[in-house]
Image (cartoon, rainbow, N blue to C red; front, top):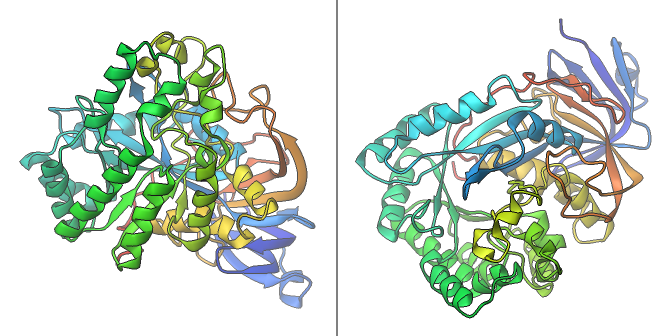
Length: 467
C-alpha cells in the first residue's frame, strides 16, 4: 500500500528554482507542489507529514560513477551493492549508475548479466548500469546496439591500463562511430596509459616506490594529451564524448576549447580533486596509499580551475568514482611498489555534503549544487525528469537537508564498508536528515529505515543533452 506524504515548510531547491513550497507525494511520485501556507497546500491531507521548516528539500543525488564489488589488481572493491547503496542513501544519493565490465574475449551481455546478478535484490536505492567495453570487435559493436535499446546507453573505454581495459585509437574510433549511429554516449578514461607505463617502469628502476610517485608518473600533460585525442577521435566519428574524472587544469582547458567550438563534449570531476591534493599522496608511513586513484590527485593549484570549470559549465557533473579498498590488506598490496596499490577511493557517502561545503565556501550557488549533483547527471545519462528534480511526475526521491548542521567526517561514523575516510577530521556544514526513495523512507531523521531490495534497476534513455 502506498502512503501519501506531505513535506511542509522547506525551501525546495532544484537546478532551476528555489521556492518555499510544500511537496505532495503519492504512489511513489511527486504529485504536486504548492506555496507553503496557501489554501491549496493547507488542504492537503496525508498519513505522513514531514516538517522541513528551516531545511532544504532537494532531489535525491544521482551518482553516475560508482564501482561496487569491482575486481581490480587481484582484489575487489570493498563495498557490495548492499553496503554501497546504503552508504549512498546516508549521503543523500538515491540513484547510482555503476559499471558492468566486459572481460576481454567475452561478450558485453555476459558482463552485464554478472553485474545484474550482483545488484539484484541487494540495493537500498535505485540503480542503472554503464558498460565498460574492454574488447572492441564486430560482435561487441552489434551488442552495443542491443544494449542501447534496453536502457544501457553509455559505454566506457580506457586509454589507460594496457593489458586490462585498454583500447587503442582504432578501437575507440570504431566504438565512437557505433555510438554516433545508435545514440549511445562514449565515456572516456583519458590518460595516455602507454606512456604512463614507461614512466612507471623508469620510476621503479630508480627506486621511487612510495605512493606519491603514483601521482608523479601519471602526469597532468598525459591526461591533457589523452583528453585532446579523445575529443578529436569523437569529432572524426561525429559522436558525443563524456570524459570521466577530470583532475588536471590542462584537461579542463582541452574540454573548454572543444566546447567553445560547439562540440558535444562533456566533463565530470570528483570531490577528491576538489578537496584533496598531492599533499595527501605524500603523507608518510604509506598513508598516501589511501589516496591512490586514477586519474591521480593533483597539486592544490588545480582545485581552483576545477571549481571554475564547474561554475562556467565546462565541467557539468560531479560523480565520485567510488571504488573503495581497505587500507589494511588491500591498499597494503602496494607496499614497496606504488604500481601495485589498488586504484580507487571511497566517497559515495560524502559527495552531497562536500559539494554543499562548496556552496558554503562560495565556490558554487545552491542551484548549481543541485545541478551538478542531481539534474545534470540525470540528464546526461537519460534519467531526467524521473530522477534529478522535484516536479510533478518525477520519482519521489527527496532529501530533507539541514544546511546548518555541523559534522566531522570520520571512518568511525561513516557507513561505507572501508576502514578509512579520505576526508578524516574534515569539518563540514550541512547534513542529510531524511531521505525518501520513490516515496519510501530510507533514512528517517538520521536513522536507516530502508532495506536491501527496495532499489530497482532503472533502464535509461539516451543522453538528453544530445537529443
